[in-house]
Structure formats: structure tokens, C-alpha cells
Image (cartoon, rainbow, N blue to C red; front, side, top):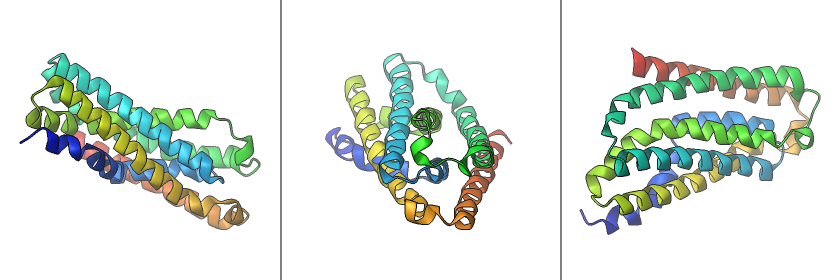
Length: 206
């Protein structure tokens, strides 16, 4: 396959990759803390930055460093993501009962963006395996492989930016006054995180 073909579609593949189920349940849960679209979009960008950081790092180690032995650990990486989703869902419920009923988005620390970045870092572990192996199969040049992963990362940032913006709409200021609806959505997103996380763990360790 000509290398121009995978490079051309790297951003598109990254965009669609960001919309996979485990990514959506995580970021959907993160943005339940936001009542401003701008903050939710920043969460999506930070997630994308974290996700790209891990994929590029692992890609560099495997492609440039020839550390192909890491491929045997990819299923464990997936399981770590599942554990993270379970913890994220539990932590969001804890946050709601401890603080969200008394604080609004303007009082939330910007450290929440750091949480989004951390979630993206862990998610990059799950995405790195198949992606790096695919790139190694299709592109023989180490430099072009790294360029592909970088463009892929930019696409994933754009995809999650869009997803985070859409998921944040039910938590806008107009709807934030409806406490019952807000709690129902937070509860739903947290339960989805926990259930899907448990499924990922069982799928990769059973």
C-alpha cells in the first residue's frame, strides 16, 4: 500500500477512533461536571492530548526502539482502561454527593482538565496496541509511522472535542436548575462507566 494513503486518512481514522464506546462513556462522564460548553470542549481537548501522548510514546518505543515485546502486554493495557472506567464512575458519584450539590462550574478547579488529560493518557494504552501494529504493517518507514500517529492523534482530539461539546449540552446552565434531571444523567453516565469498565476487564483478563 502506498504510504500516502494511510497518511491521508490518519486524521479521519483518529476522529472515528475517538468515538469508540469506552472513550465516549469516559468523556461523557467527565463533562457531567460542566455547565459551560467551553469547559467541556477543553476537557475533550485535554483528553485528546493525553491520548495522543501515550500513543506517540508507545509508538516511538515499539517502532523506533523495536520493542515489539510490548505487544504481549496490550491486553493488560486494555484491562487497565477498564479499571479506570470503574474508578471514574465511582469517583464521579462521590464528587456529586460531596460537592456538586453546592458548587457550580465556575467554582470547579481547572484541575478537572488535568483529570481529563489523565483519562486520555490511560485510554492511549488501549488504543496504542492495535494502532501501532497496524502502522507497522502498512508503513515501513519509522519517520512516516510516527507522522501517521501524530496526525491520528490530532484527529482524535477533534473527535473528542465534538463529542465532549455534544455530551455537555444537557448540563448547560438552563438545564442545571433541574436537579432531578441532572442527577439522573450523572447516575446514568456513572453506571455506564462502571458496567462497561467491568466488561472490558473481564473481556481481557478472563
